[in-house]
Image (cartoon, rainbow, N blue to C red; front, side):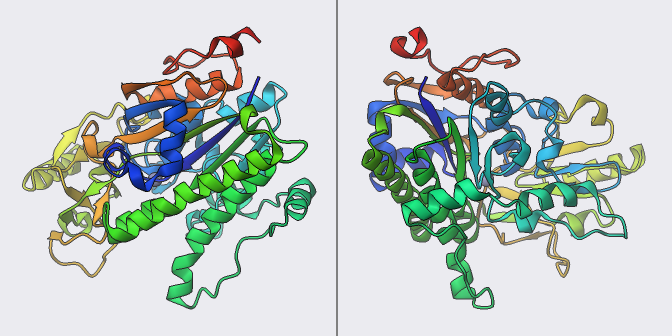
Length: 421
Ligand SMILES: [Zn+2]
């Protein structure tokens, strides 16, 4: 059975890839010899941690437990973390099947489900300051991820490959240098993936991600020139991985999956929940707003105030069943998002800080993402649409793992030569 690398590129929409394919020559070359999902639907809700969790588990958010970047813990909306995932993940399944697993910067993977682990370069941002003397569980989980030391095998692979084993050393007091840190860290992660895949004792499964296209689009704009530059860096980084494989003569041994966690699209205005609903416990997830109402009266008040902005209640089916009476969900009209961080705001609706975003009303096409697969287990072809739940069983099948426990089917049948092995 061939090996598998899963390369998650944060926030590349289906339309973005389709319209700008010339900017993605390495992605397009994978597609030419492999399989494409033209419109891979996002998980509900369509934000980053649910998207990653869906790729890793193949179950919907009400089952995985990760239905937002933040989830309600009974007192507060806090960042979801890898220990919140309630089902077995792809790396855990592979490890249980005696496969060697590496996660190089992939969010929502537990270090203990791998043999080689480097935390995401952004994981420090997710470590919440404890509000009281006792640290909340989220701190411990993300701390474990952020502080994990990859270990001697990783160091040796880097040394043999002539690569640094540490993230770039950047002067974070300089805004210009700070802006470059993410892209350099993303490039470092993909170079590490390439070196590991080309090493003599390569993992069977490598998971990694390239985050910065999401940030550039949020800050500068969907398909803006700098967003283009950021995705071109992701494409170039895939090319570097393939160069590592070719140099080691192992290109034919690797299946590759390249996909996003969600799409991206233009945002015109941002509703300000902290102005519209002062004192209400809310969490903004793009065009969706989660509310933890204190009682039925507060929920009625929230529903009425949001209705004035054409914001509608949305079914709570993405929330785990036992939490559904505590968390309500609302969706905004298209091209309008929620932003609640501006505590100086006095207007209910403002120009958006994130001029492109995701997590819109579930099903809107801007949230659709791209997905490509190539390698010995992958037939040539394409499918117009696939559900988020189909990704993980497809990846499991490419690895040769059993498909029990996945509610959905893979997007393609394996190549005969692979299935026969
Ligand atoms: Zn994302």
